[in-house]
Image 1 (spheres, rainbow, N blue to C red):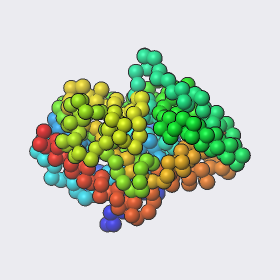
Image 2 (cartoon, rainbow, N blue to C red):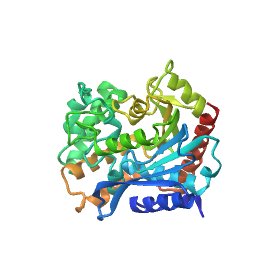
Image 3 (spheres, rainbow, N blue to C red):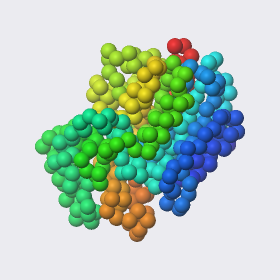
Length: 361
């Protein structure tokens, strides 16, 4: 079978391929139904495949579709890993758990956000504490997340964002747009006011399945930042943190650190890669986001803004939907043979690095 066939055209096909590949490899499987359905009424679920000893104390975990529409990439990598039979000769005492479509609603509806319009990578905060503030977003809220998406509004808001960037700098604009915000439920990169379904589901899954684990490596597949097809291995921690050194040992020196300001994305509040180690305080963890580049940043941001308008102020099944959905799909899925091949090669190498690190630890 052509390895590029591991990728899919939509969520339903991706789910079918993942479940079939897991069954073919004899994986222990689990389905966690989502309470809502997809745009065609299709059932949604988080699907889990476990390979290796159930009592393993060393576990590699992979996540796809934390950011819904980005699931095309992660699902393809997970299916390819299974189809290659990588789970048939795992190191002694090591297991692998693939979590397919952490945010299945976003994957099916071609949204980066969850059904609550929440960015899952801004939702892992302590909601009992004071919410983080993003003053830049608050100043630009009507520009970044307008209630109108006419050609005139698009031109005016792009000009306003350009002016802000020239006045405050590109880093400040990026922080304002994507750093996360907790004041505008209809806005982009909204972090929510409580743990959402996807966070609660992942919390329960990891707490149950990894209760015995003593060492855990996590690969969280993402797209939308960086050069075409390049997978940047990003971690949250910085030098001096044991998890930083552990990640360098397990994933290699090419990792980039949000804490050091060297990653394609600056440090954000409520990232999943912060939430998971906090859940697994009994284990040594090394968590990496493998971020694959697609289109230039302004095009990606515009696709997010257009999709936000469609779901918050328009009709996601209406006349405007097809063009906007094509735009956001292209922003997060490089649907070309060269891009797909780059994803599979780098994903496979990263998984093998993680397994080697777990085995040697």
